[in-house]
Length: 415
Ligand SMILES: Cc1cc2nc3c(=O)[nH]c(=O)nc-3n(C[C@H](O)[C@H](O)[C@H](O)COP(=O)(O)OP(=O)(O)OC[C@H]3O[C@@H](n4cnc5c(N)ncnc54)[C@H](O)[C@@H]3O)c2cc1C
Image (cartoon, rainbow, N blue to C red; front, side, top):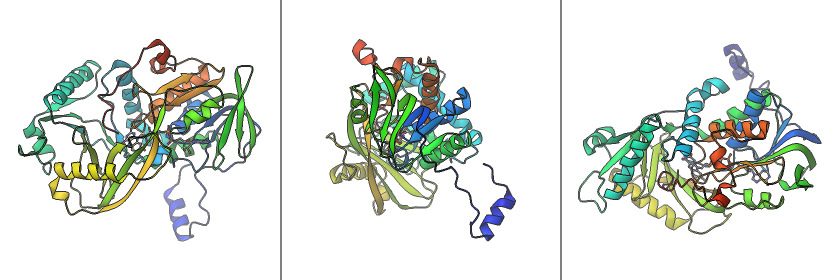
């Protein structure tokens, strides 16, 4: 749906009475070719690419609440592709390339801003790991550079580079093409585009179970009745384990609350993303001027989406160590999301032992950046019944084979 300038003017002076919703609110039909459980960015992107690239339009995306209010609408919006291992680098770089044309493709301003992502090193070990990572990234054709302290000072003038710090900064790496985007715009953009291609988006409809007959997924049980499906795809971050258990599929996942917060709005002061592993905090400045602060995950598994004062206090202490100039800034609000974490901190994308049941989960603290790539490869997997080369290494069976993709260094900071 495209709005002309004249239509915008007409709606503005007409009190928006004729404003059409960006997507429909259909009642669920009794059967679809594909039912996607979870209307976060990944589920909506999957639906869009199924319709757009594979011509599969008889698709429903079902969410227990309004779309995009899970982790998609709660994350701190860092987008980058600087992962160490070849399979991850390929998958996240594919996603980043899609990001670069996505506002145009969806005709929706995602406010994607490639302002660079700078990761700080505080110990010799961190510095060595970064040098190794930059080398690996260059071999994979992904933009990445080490920064000297002088370069860092020029790039982030307010950063405290004093030698007197508890942990002085020793160096940094940067991915210039990394940055931020508006998180809920991603969900809305994909939702509108998928809807326009015929996908039904069913909101406020919790799925309680996956129906399996003779080893094959045949539908889902929902608050609005049973819906039959030729294929069922579960993309329900944070709550995926309990849902998949209803189909007899056990996932090696633990769910944790991950904390975040924003400050009051400030004048522009930080034009890049700062990630800091040892002095744990990551921070960027939103277009509204708020400092968006990422904290750690809680130490205990839990489904409680509430704040953890000690985690937030540690993050604020870290921020002030890096930017003492912010000591009088006030916090505006804080929140948490439930993230699903695998043993190797890499996602699970692929078929399961139940025929026609597919799962996309385990993105942990860092799946926002991957959304376009994840939806793209997952749609391919659902449409063809087989993994794409990019997601083949990320199958569930890797845990049985011991073929883990250990990204604890690249995913160590929660972002
Ligand atoms: C505080 C925080 C900061 C983060 N920061 C970053 C970051 O900077 N960069 C980054 O790349 N990633 C970040 N992440 C991670 C990122 O947000 C997630 O990996 C990503 O958004 C997952 O998207 P998704 O679509 O899979 O899940 P979600 O957006 O969580 O969507 C899952 C959907 O499933 C629905 N659902 C669940 N159970 C059911 C059910 N039974 N029936 C129907 N629907 C159901 C939920 O309502 C939800 O809408 C962060 C996460 C958090 C919490």
